[in-house]
Length: 445
Image (tube, rainbow, N blue to C red; front, side, top):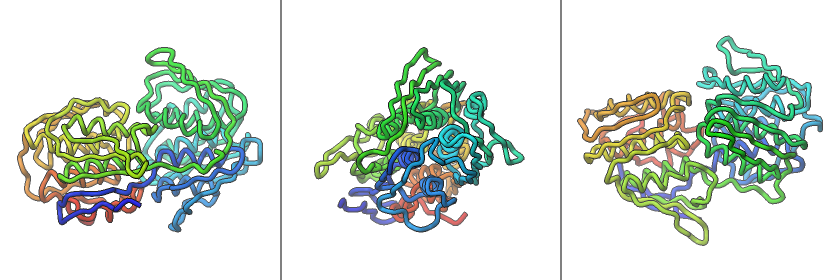
């Protein structure tokens, strides 16, 4: 067992191994696939966060997950389409866009034809939309009724056997592609998903295909042009023969590694290597772009990621494949700006459709702390220099990743105070303990 990270004093340096939650993205996909796969699926190292609890609650048929600890090994007996999983159901998806989209597609295509499923969100998800996915499902014959006054979720979805070909046009999120791939793979006959338009955050589609492979499905991705892809899907799904161990979360690892650098210490995340299918593993490459040291190391025979060293130069990065890394990398850009180096971060066009308008929030937060920053529709430019502001207070605005971002910025901006610590429960419930001596002060909302 790795020694847990050490934090020394307010604004102290990190040193040692940070134990981050397991991958939320892999866990949510695996839980939903397990509920419609042939056989019994065993999942180990599920992360203890609200998004995964919601997925487990759907699979177990218990509604919103309780506060009880998740089991060390979760076992799911699958019910494939045609095996009696067509009764009326009510699924609570919490505030997870991934879960909402994947559950909606699964309710339409992955259950017994004729059943009806209500999908209920909460929080910011009540105002978010997925028009491309809804058009794809309805064009394929699914009946979707909006239950709320604002459109979007909550929804009632009636299931049917999907056609041989489904068309998705102009996706606004990779989650729409992933949702359809998972639902179509539940059936034994080959299916074709045709995607017209650029797929945002493509690495997450590769992640979905990797998890589908674990369940015995084959997906062949055929690029037709820069703006059209064919996905040839060969099901059905079968529970993995061995227990599926969920690896550490690359997004959380990115926070830990960045904290090691900004705190002038070091951080190590064990059990995660550069061969991971998680796109956010590219944080290692991006840290090196800032002049930090970052690499994969072998520790006790297993891959680990390690980082140290403060930023020594600015960057020009394109995060179109990993936009969720922006809240992690912007504090590094702020540290570089403070040292006289400007940065440009591109590929951020999807950030404002997340739990909060992240691009706008990052700009406002940096300006409140005395940085010169500009933003376009999909990029952020941070000029060199810094004009200190006394006692700035930043709000996470209901967004766990923005709270992580401001915590990292606390090592750059002395006296920073942050509101919104309750939102870490969505993905990293132990964050407040793991980073109890971080550079910023957490205040009540």
